[in-house]
Amino acid sequence: MAAKMGSKTTSLKDDLTAALPENFQCKVRHFLSASVNPSGEATPRDVLVLGIEVLVYSTKHLTTIFVSKADSTGFLQRQRPSPVQTIITTFLSWLSNQERQKHPSRRIVISLFARAQSQYLFPGSAENSKKHVLDDRQLIKWWARVLDPIIPSPGTANPSDDNQEASHEGYITVPGYEGAEVRQFMPPSNGSSGRPRWKSGNPLPELAQARQIQDDAPPRCLLPRFPDDPKARFMQDLDDEIGLTGDTANPSPTKKRKSGKWSSIRDLDRFWEAMEFRQECSSGRMVGFLWLVTRPPPSSRGENVANGASQESMFDSQNSEVLSQPEEVASVSRSPTKRRRKPLSGPIIPRQPRLKGGSSSLTASSDLSGMLDTGIADGVVLPKEGYAKAMQTLLHLEFNTLDAAVTSTSKWVSEVSATGGFQAGSSIEVQGTAKVATSAVTNGGNAQVNDLGGMIRKKRKLEDPFVSRPEEAQKAQPAVNVLGAGMIRKKTKPVSS
Image (tube, rainbow, N blue to C red; front, top):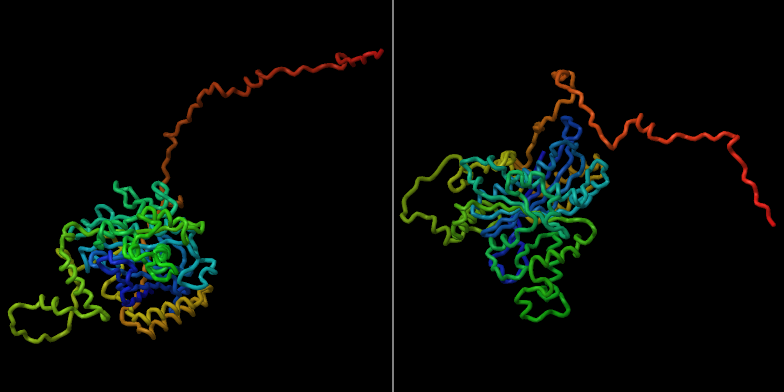
C-alpha cells in the first residue's frame, strides 16, 4: 500500500535582500509512504517500509522539487530491481510531470542533499539488522541512480509529445572533489548515448537567471535556502557577519548591509571552497549536492509572463487554501457580449488540463510516468498544523522490531486518519511482479549441448629462449666433487720459537 499526504503551506520566504524580484515560496509539502504485509496473510498487518518528504517551491519561472528526507525501515525484502529505488524514482518523475503539465514554460529542477545517516524518519530502524545503511560514497551514487531514469533516453520519447524537445541535465557537487574526481559518483549510463547526462558542478547561475536575478547580484542571492540544509546554515553565519539578521552585537555599516555582499565570499566558487570546511562537509565523510534540471522546449520559452501568471492562477484556484482570483484577471476571461445561458444540469465531469499543442495525458518521458494515476493519487490533504502533527507523531514511534513497527504503523495511520480523514483514493494497493532481465541459463540439464570436438586444436608451445628444459638445466649444473678420506690432511700447527 502506498499513501501520499500533502499540506498546503504558507510562503517560506527566502531571507534574501531586495535583489530578488520574486519570493521563493513553498507551495506544498508531499509525504509519500509505502507499506507491505510481511506475513502475506489475508488479515492486514501492514508495516511501513519507506517514507519520503518532498517540498515544492515555485516562482513564475522556476519550480524546485526539493527532497527533504527519505528513509526506509528495512522490513522490505531485498530484491532486484530495488522497490525502494523504483518507488522514489516514480514519485519524483510523477511530480516533475505534474508541474510541467501545469507550467510548460517553466524550468523544473529536482534538488537534494545526500548525507549518510543511519535513520531519518523512522526512529529505532537503525537497530534493525536487516536494514541496509549506505555509507557516504554509496549514498551519493544511489541518489544519482534514482534520478537518472527520469532523464529520457534518446528515441524513447513519444513523437507527439513535447517532452522530446525538452532537455534534461544532471549536476553533482561534492565539496572537496572536482572534475574527474566527481565522475566516480555518476551513473554508468552517463555518456553512453554520446552526450553526457551528468556534469560536475551546479546549475545555480542558470537557475538564478530563470528567477530573473540580476547578473551582478551578490552570491547570497543565487543560493536558495532549504530546511535542514548545510548551505543555509553557512549562509546564515555569513549574514550574521555583515549584520543582516540583527542578531550580532556589532552590526556592520548600513551600506554593506544594503548591498548584501559578504565580506569573505565574493563568488560561488569561493563559497563551495569554503563549504569544504563547514558543517557536515568537514566531518570526514563525503556529502553530495545533486540537481536534475528540466528545461522547457524552445517553443514554450517564448510565452510571456502574463500568460504564465494567468495559467498559474488557474491551476492554483483548484486548491482549497489559496487566494481567490483577482477581479482584473477574472474580467479578462469574460465574454465581451452578454448572452443568456441555460442553467447546466447533470453530473460534473472534471477534465484533465491539456498541454499547449499536446494531449491531456502524462508526458511519456519514460515507463515510470504511467505507474501513478492522477485521478487516484491525490492523497490526503492536511492543514499545516495537521501535517506538522502527523510528522511529529511519526518521529516519536519505534521501528526497531517488526512487532513494534506494525504497532507504530497502525498508530500513525490512525493519527493521520483522525486529523484529515482517509479520503477515497488516499492509498493505492499495488500488486504484481517486476520484470527482471533474465541472465544466462545456469542449469545445463535442458540446455542444448554444442559439440566442439572437431573445432578444438591443441595450441603449439612456443620456444622460449629464456626458459631451459629440465634435461638441459641438469646438464648445465656443475658436477659435485666427492673427496675421499685419504685426500683430507690435517694442517700442522706452526712451532713457536
